[in-house]
Image (cartoon, rainbow, N blue to C red; front, side, top):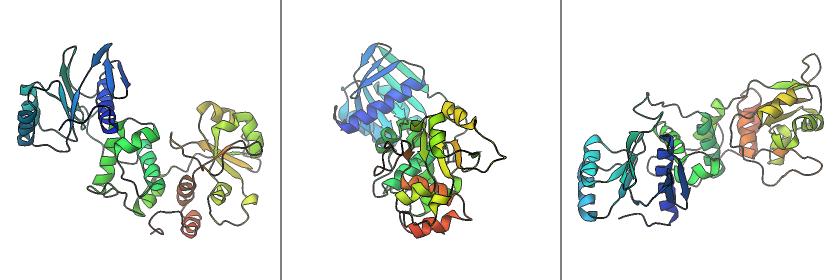
Length: 325
């Protein structure tokens, strides 16, 4: 019943335990699921469960008694369930925000810093991490929305990703048993929460902005970028370019040329998400050294403007699951 060491599942679970210990301020190093905590190697037996009851845990430790140290990783473990494990010398990772690892060289039992039990749990999925999870789910709509799959992709911790996915599940946007996104509802909900204010107009073309800010910090998300992803939009060459800027320093450099008294030729704003996927079919070149956002990102940016963008997105057909409301 232990997760086999060295498998991808074991590595993901061990990383979750490591993330929890790191949140407590411990120095944690992880290589292929092997943890070193404050300089001490920690070898773990890991059991994966969703919502085990005290009876389930009692049966588990009876069947596996004598194999230590062991950690049960679960979405939730009740206080009576924790007591069953504690009496046996086992540990746990309750993803709601509590960890216990009880092994020679490491004895820890504590809530995660800043997690459940220390402040009221937020139910809002539309954080920056939530937007990144939504984008990832929309790009691969046939794949399960799970923390172990998405966290490495978006560059977030498994714990933070798992918490946000739980909020989407509670909101009915991810299936509780299938773990698949609800489509097209997830797209249109994400579009409704996609930040699209605070754009800065610049009176220079995109090439001049790239020269000032650095082309590698620019990700194009305008109508031209959308057409590169398959959208049908007339006269895109006449519209000002729009770019997300991925670096605060680059954004400051770009804004030096702001002059609202002159017509805007390029608009810039800070990227609303840290993980910003690109259009794989249009990498930077010598003639256009800036990056082009993934079609889903362009669609979310367009759909955030219901007055002119939603009709374009509906006609485009890029939304998984069909047209909007």
